[in-house]
Image: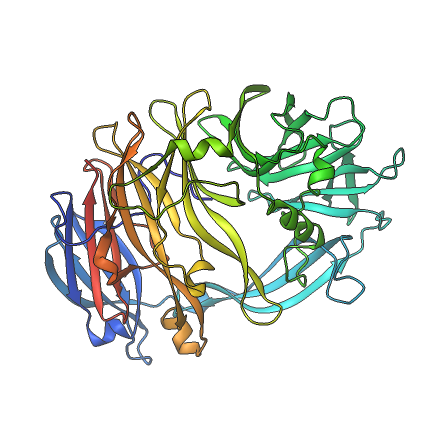
Length: 537
């Protein structure tokens, strides 16, 4: 999930208002045969650089730059070169690492959750054309049998520490005290090929409700008591470092016995849970399955693994309530409940959008979470479904767009609705991108949606060069202003009139002083350069 507090992804079309400025410029033949390399603000002007083909015999790299002034007026384009860095300046290197999986590809392993540790070794070489290291070949990939591995661990989650590439693995095995329960362990793999396992800081029979890695690399785990416990709402939230050291432990009263968490995020020093629940009063493990979406069986097609498939299947059940929980350190600040039946009465659409629907309890994924300047909360996402792309290739779909607004105490204030424009199969297999932008006045908020349109063909120049056809997404922006005081949303504007699309791999050029973003894109045929500037008032 992508998050932002001040500036995030956006775009706008030509002269829609005093806030928007746009220029469309023809690309040269060389630029259309190359690809967009970078976009930046240089000495007050905006420079867009394309990597273009040139004389292969020369020890040079060829570019074409397009320059625009502060008002996005086209100034010039020119070809430039720079010397290549030779491969001799960057010798070949060997890169190794570890990762954890479950199961395998054989008929015996495809449904297995048995934990496996794997080591990869790649040979990397310097590519003087791309001016970076690339993988030349895979030297080896092997499953490693730890010296003290008795083969009884199942895998539930695996996270990599970005600092030193070490592994944090959550494993489980049949409880010695209760055969219907699982004992959970934090498992790490040392340089001597040994497993180091320590029990998770919980007691009694527990179900794993959720696991995720926070932005700073810490691991968040949530557990719920099994059937037969004295209090089925006595949940436990644990936070560990990537090395397995306990940071926070909070025993808390869940707003439901079967709290299904769909997102955990950290903002402004607090951790937030977004979840749903059914009407049932049964234990979590009687309504849903253990969460195991954070570890992969590379050959299981329907989900990340067998347990994840079971979890997803039950998570599609219609929900009765939505819950928002806030934790700060070892303290639960609030845990609130909004009945699904309440959303209809708080549903708001823009004046020109009448086809959106209030939330009815379907499964959804969160794409953006924001703490507003006055301490309220905005949660944006999409409803999820499933579709098949050919035989035995089920994929998640991203359907209706939802946006929930909660007050400082976590109580539902409003749901804002907007119709999704493209609902064909090629488009629904990709999520839209959503963000909230704070205006220049420090009070206004803008809701930004990068609407997705799916295509079939070549995703970019390199794909065309390799002859690789596929489905791929292209995005165009929509924008509306939110009034969080009156809980209303203005009309959305389709930016670029669906004629131009953003370049996927580039963030917009941000000017924090002007409070503007400049976006770079092209037409459908990659023949025209589209540069657009929007100032957030």
